[in-house]
Image (tube, rainbow, N blue to C red; front, side):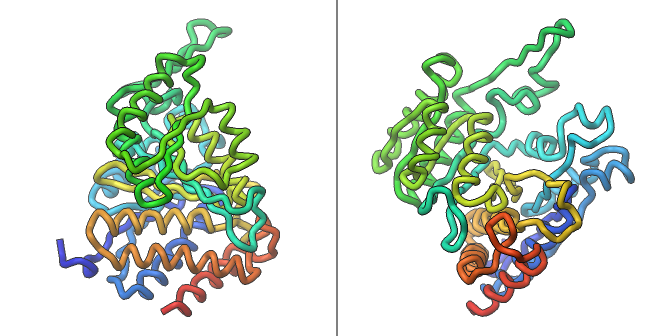
Amino acid sequence: MTTPGSRTCRLGVLHGDGIGPEIVPSSVAVVDAAVAAAGGEAIEWHELPLGFAALTEYGEHTPASTLKALEDLDGWLLGPHDSAAYPEPHRSRLNPSGTIRKHFGLYANIRPAKAFEGGNALVPGTDLVIARENTEGFYADRNTFRGTDEMMPTPDVAIMHGIITRAATEKIAHSAFRLAQRRRRKVTIVHKANVLKMTTGLFRDVCREVGRQYPEVEVDDFHVDAMTVHLVRRAHEFDVIVTENMFGDILSDLAGEIAGSLGIAPSVNSSDTHAMAQAAHGSAPDIAGQDRANPIAMNLSSAMLLEWLGARHDDPRLTDAAHRIEDGIARTVRSGVSTRDLGGSAGCSEFTEAVVAAIGSSR
């Protein structure tokens, strides 16, 4: 490794489907501007095939060559995919993001929800993070080493197994508590232990055990159904929420809308050695190619990736670049420039140009 602040980052670019080819290039432009403003080394970008384009050329949505190339990179930006529209048998198989998460063991899915001044938040002041366990739970496409945990013994009966382990729960719990140490020092455990006593009961209890190693962090817990009500009424009171896979997926979408729009909901998927920036929303094929997409979620996901890389490689310039992206987006929205989902009229390209300009003016 080179000295702190001087290493060249090698990042993958996976455009994906739908609005992906619009919001991912937007994020590349924003990252380049922020890294330059922070005085860091220019990013070395590597574009790789994925999604419909890869199906056409390689016969699979996530080619083995793409996975191999990702192994040698510092991180990557993953655009949304439209796997529901893939032809069979690809539609019924593990989708591109699931394939990558499973291949690299990306156990932590960190999803912030933060309202912007000048945005249209349903609960102003919302500033929380959902730490979602990303490898097991009740999602059958990722909770076994081989195959899935869904089956149909007859055409009229479908069965799904949910898996919760101490080892996986401990990892996401530590991620949540370390995150809370850097924020407002509060963790809320979300479960359904009144009904799913053994599975989510184990999740709750292990999170509590881990929490005792962080005595400076306040801990409480709620059932997932009650948590939806608490988010709608008082999202601004929560700091870090830790939960299993499916609950985290549902709650993070709700939190994104509460903060203003799912279009501003970022996420990063990580293990101890790899990380992937991925917006929490889908591919929005109905507006693809119309320059109407909101790139904020993908932009902020890219900022989260830079911050993760800055911490991993002791590179303060990457951390600085991440904060410049966050600040540039906040100032742009506050100035009245936003996309339609936030009540504005700017297109994806216009908004991107405004953010790049805001980042440049902060040097």
